[in-house]
Image 1 (cartoon, helix red, strand yellow):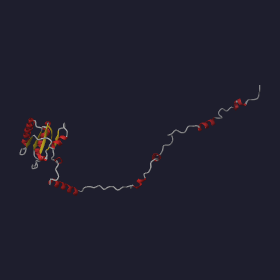
Image 2 (tube, one colour):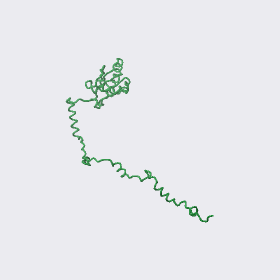
Image 3 (tube, helix red, strand yellow):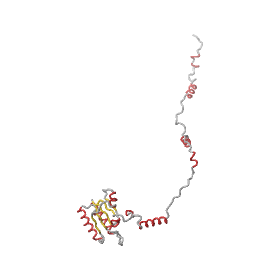
Image 4 (cartoon, one colour):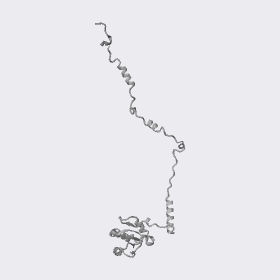
Length: 216
């Protein structure tokens, strides 16, 4: 038996982890790059610079003033408004400007909800022929309801479609247009189911002192 020792197989000379450090260093060098998004978040200034890096300056805008002068608003003074109102009244008095009855507070109109609003405009403009008329001048308030009721019944019996009721404007009454208000109340409540629409008449037919009534 050979007494000489073989050092390659001697356990005292065997170091299994002697190359471990080299292997770890080698793995670190081959490690993949850091995942995107794990770095620190960008500041607002950096994000703005990235977003604006392709924006080009418009040199012509350098000439625009930073604080342009504001236009002064023009307001009508009270004196100017009064002058314009007086001029308009003079034109009306001299028949140079027509009076729109629909612009006055005395103007009356009513339409049955089952019909189109355009009917009122057509009725006021005289597009429907007047077939009968009731004149309440000289009739006291207590008798007005009876006269309107009698006239209404006769109109329905005859099959009339468009009638006129003259009630006056009540300008001379200390209590105002009480007769006009009474007629409007009767038409809009007691007889409404028989009516399509009623509206103040044209100037040539009594204007604000009369009503056109369109029956169903």
